[in-house]
Length: 196
Image 1 (tube, helix red, strand yellow):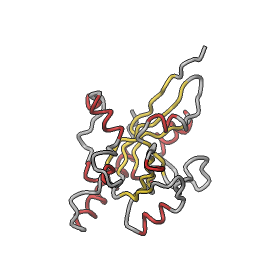
Image 2: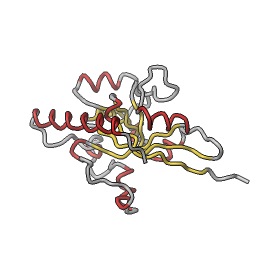
Image 3: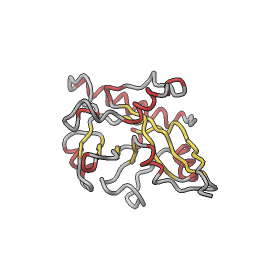
Image 4: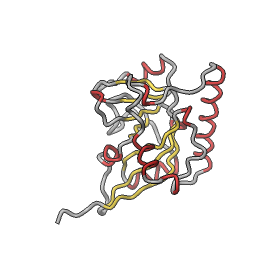
């Protein structure tokens, strides 16, 4: 578990500011992900469904999570070195990033663990994934395969993130614009199976 008071305070302050903005604009809540595609009965966040199904609340504290701000638990696949750096210093937005350019610049997270694992660099038979708290706020929704100007379009509409759902079949990715919106709560190690 990652416990960094500086990163946590930045995260909490960002969350409080979004709550204040909602109150000023007289909004009860941000539009949840399952309502963005026009079918509110589908599109629930996969991470949340898995935690509920497997009693994940026993292992992960959800008591401080605010659904009305679209605060979610999401995955970020990476290397061992990057996971340690993110745990120490937080995410860094890089215009020259190797991954994460299909939907513009931002912190890329996924609700589908398999999607995040596909970005991992294996080290000694282990893949490293971060389970992050993320305050997505109001989301700009796109079903395009590539939408590089999505962050600009989102900001023009006063939104704090992008929810990309390519061809409406996913896997869905969440792109957050401010590193303070994301707190890397857990580094999870997955031992890969040998094919022998």
